[in-house]
Structures are given as C-alpha cells and as structure tokens.
Length: 376
Image (cartoon, rainbow, N blue to C red; front, side, top):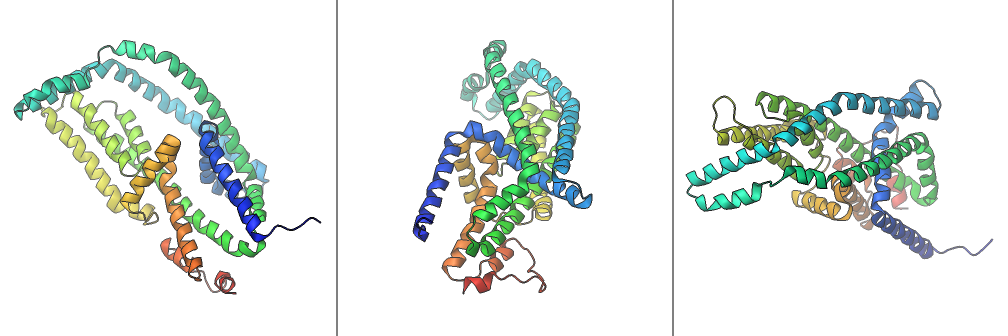
C-alpha cells in the first residue's frame, strides 16, 4: 500500500478540484446551461418520483419514466394551447408596434408641453422612434433561425439530462455521501438536509408565485383592456423569479404598452397608464404582505442590498441563469456561513440553522448526535 496523504494534502487536492470545476463551469457556460436547468427541474420533480416509488412499490426507472412522460405531455399539451395564442399576440404586436410607439410619442409630447417642457419633444421622438420595423425584422431573421436551432439542441440535452437525473439521483447522492470523510458525515449530511429544506421551500414557493401572479395579472389586464394581456401576464409571472428588479420591469413594460394603446372608457392616456401602474403596485404589495409570508415565509433572510448585489454578480457571471439562481445560492451561502461561524466558535450549529429555517427541533425519539461529536 502506498503512502497515505496527510490531512493538508487531502484538503489541497479537494480545493484544487473544486476550483477547476468552477472554472470549467464558468468557461463552458453555454454547454453547462441545459444541465443546470435539468438539475433545477429534476430537483422539483424528485419528490414526485420518490412518492411513486414508495407508494406503488415500483422500480425507480419506471417511476422516473412515468414522471418524465407526464412532463413531456404537460409541455406538449401546454404548448398546443398557449403557443398559438402567444404567436397570435406576437403577430398582433408586430403589426401594432408602430402605432403603439407613435401613440406613446404623442402622449409623452403632449404631457411635456402641458408641463412646460416642450424642449423634450425632440428627445422623445428620437428616443422612441422606429424608422423601419420591417428592416429590423429582416436583419434578425438569420440570427433567429440559428438561435432556434441552438435552442432545439439545448432542449434535447435538457430533456435527456432531466430523465437521467430523475432516475439516478439516489445513486448520485450515495456517491457524494461516500466522498465525505466518515468523521464528517454526521455533520455534513444534516447540513445538506438543512440546505435542501431551504431550497425546496424556495423553489415550491416561487412556482406558486409565478402561477398566482401570471393568473391575477392576466385577469387585471383583460379587465383594463390592455392589449397583449397574455404575453404581459406570462412575462410578469416569469419575471417574478427575479426579486425587486423583475416586478418593476414587468410593471414598466405593461405601462409602456398601455401608454401606446388608446385609453378605454373616455379616460385620458395618463390616467389609463396610472391605473395600470396602480394595479401592478397593489398586486405587488398584496403579494409581499399576504402571499409571500404564508408561501415562502421568511426563509430567504437577505438584506435588499445583498439581494441586489447577488443579482448583479450572478448576471455578470452567468447571464440570465445567474440572475435566476443568485438569490437561492446567496441564501445557501448564508446557511453555510452560519455553520462555519458556529464551528469556529466550537458551538453546535444546528440549533441556529433550525432557528433560521423556523424548523421545529427534533423530537426526543430522534436525537441529533452532532453537538456531542462537535465537542469530542
């Protein structure tokens, strides 16, 4: 048997491998992206696979295949219903865009004149004007075809990776568990469980919020007769996953569309836009004060400045994907820092983690040996 590695050598090797993996992920972002999306979706669907496997005593492969086929059916069924509606609205938007822009220009110019800011008229026209929409579409035709082909390839990789992750997740977890030193398993595994609780609650809450905000926004925009209500509602739901910035962006786009659309019920254009803005503001406050506390709770206890920094950092490193995962990653790092801080103080970290997650302490029948090991 060869010479044993010292503890320092093992730590250095682990750190080097971790840094190499992070560098590969950073440099190969386009290649890694479908696998990351597959991991996120598989994480959401794994409880369903486990439920089928446990409840009906079926093999893991069969349970994963049932969930995967249901996923494909949902995608195809939803696509057959929503895609034609979305395509029709995109075509309507293409036809109506010049008039929407012209109406928005006129409204802004009239408002500027009423406020004594007539010098801004030229700036408004130059900022909002579109010279030749057909030329813009023609120039984007070839990149669109190339991008669509790339999307189909990524979609295929995404679906394949999703199935294998659903089927082989227990093997992957066992492999990761075997990599941990035996002396650390009794602490690292519970830490992973706490992180899993945080991420699971966050993901489930975000999925619920997307559905709620998209549905309520669709109803509100339809009542207010804002054009392209379906597109705007879907966009609002998707942008809901980007804290702070997403809802503001969705509301601003809806207001711009309302600004270019003739106001109903004899309202002035400015009052019409103000009503749309008020609707988004009221929905956002209702979500903040009633929906989020009951759905997600205070699980992601991050200061707004930390959230904004995380979003900017994630976007700079990994684009849209980085923005979407920035907040849960930052929340996970917060749990890790709490754990590390407690270990540096020679304290049991798990009562603090359970308090952070608002998880009840385990019953006496299931004692946690971590605290005794930490001081041994």
